[in-house]
Length: 470
Image 1 (cartoon, one colour):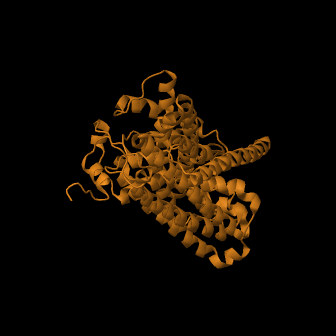
Image 2 (image 1 turned 135 degrees about the vertical axis):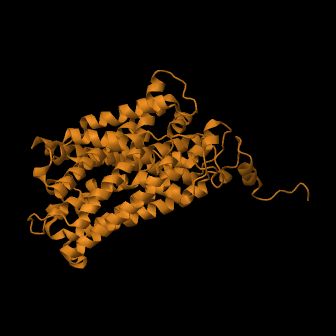
Image 3 (image 1 turned 60 degrees about the vertical axis):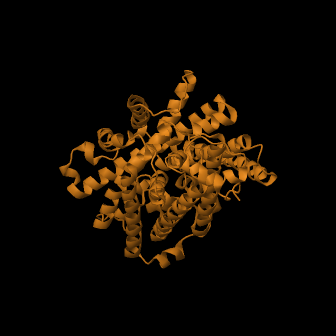
């Protein structure tokens, strides 16, 4: 009796002794905790509740895409849009769990370390390039929409004639710089994701308020049921617009390991719960905003286009009546614009963080500087955040089409980061324990990622060239 041990003895021992452990049982590895090293970084980590982890992931996931989802869904129709949202959610969930499993198996706390453990420096550098440009491009899109929302709200509240040009103009360079420096930059300097948890809780309220605004305005314009009567059910050619936006809606690959490793007792089972709640919230809110927004303007869908709404932002469409005539923004819509401005500002650090990490890792690898796992100095964080953020500000106002930027990010960079890299790394790192069935699934993910990235990127480049040629 003395030598018998309970079934979960290893898990219990792992939780009580925060030291580096090695476990050979692969099935056990998928259920229990990440090996934790007894170093400075681990000592600073504190246990996050499921709720706080969900709010952090939601802030990393929900951004400007929620404002443009109605325009994206209009491209594919009601049924085909919902199907694409479900497919992208399932694929993203699978790839995120795969990434966490790689983190466990390789004892790696960052995406870059997973890449290095799989194939060495060349794969880490490739990952760094894709990580930087995907999140850097998203930052450009976010800053552009923040500037547009602030300018439109200021003109509505104070009147265009009473404001200086650099506030009332949505293309204002000074306004973009001021918003970035005063609001975005300080948040981006936070050392750990958990330091932003109270901002992320507020972000949930802002997104729920947007759902209320869209539902209320939908019934003010016309009954939603009548709007669905004129809405299209399936437009298969719209996949090049809707699918990239749907992928963008579930993307949190650059921050998932930050949430995972900041838990005191990180486990794959706990992260699966966090991801399920996060994706459920994302799906429901995007479904409400996307479908009701589309149904509201289904009789005059051009009002959702970039020509009328400055990059497809649903809130800006409410300055028009259904016949295309202008009207004043209702107070509820104006409140929604202000809240979503703060929501986008709150989500900015979650774009800058992975872009900054990708740039830092790229430079260190290039200069052959050892990438030790230690607490990042403020000077290092200040330098790379400044370069990443303000380089995006430098070109933000020269991007004519935010929807085109979103489509290119979703079709070119995100399939590689979300589908190709996780499965490629898993096949290498877990090659000794992977089953035939798992191997075939990950190989299918690789094929899907390559085919979709090549196909949709080509289509969006052709579309972009046609837009700029005009």
